[in-house]
Image 1 (tube, rainbow, N blue to C red):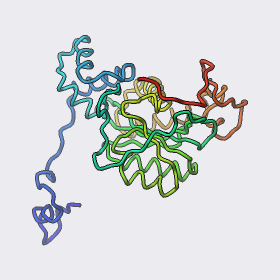
Image 2 (cartoon, rainbow, N blue to C red):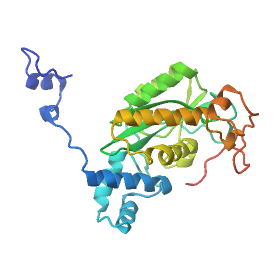
Image 3 (cartoon, one colour):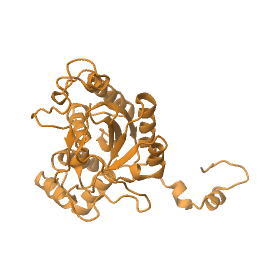
Image 4 (tube, helix red, strand yellow):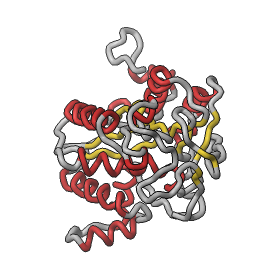
Length: 292
């Protein structure tokens, strides 16, 4: 909003009119050091294995690997990554204080058809010299990735863009499930859903199992794509994710989908679809909360 070369209106006056602090106009945040980036990569890998680790336990883990780090430093890095331990405790994953939250609607619900329930989440993606954030929207019953976006900030904009793309390309779900992060509780995000009469469902605080399928997606994506390729730039990362997601949707069969790919399950083609069948032979058609 600030125009540095605007004639007749100085930067000081523009900041005053916009109620902005002038120092914020000139501030350029310093990038994380190579050491911090390597620590963030290790934190990300360990968090996939132990999402209940807070800053204290994560610092202990890194010290066992030979890194002399303190809890406060690790806490800052985890905050920068958007990570928070997910075990049940008072006021875990506190949403924006002015944003309303919504009840969890999937307990005991039989989910057995495309576009019945969509879900979304955000994850941290490390690169060789930096990092980005990724959001994806998935169809719950078929595991198909409907849309995704990368961003260098945790603002709500890239989540809204992914949602609008998914709605434009794939129609309207009955229920949309997310966590209670401020991006998803933002009125700008929820209004998009309300305008289309989509029911809004949100996980309980610290309940990673409430959105378990997209958590499994992050694990597969990182081990099969992100960690195998030290992407240098955002464009390289985008190209790599485009290839992996295309393979995941179109060519990778799931035992939970009776050997179908997500595309086949979503479009009701290919091998016989047996809703609710998982690799262990247990039903996913009815999904309840379990203790994390």
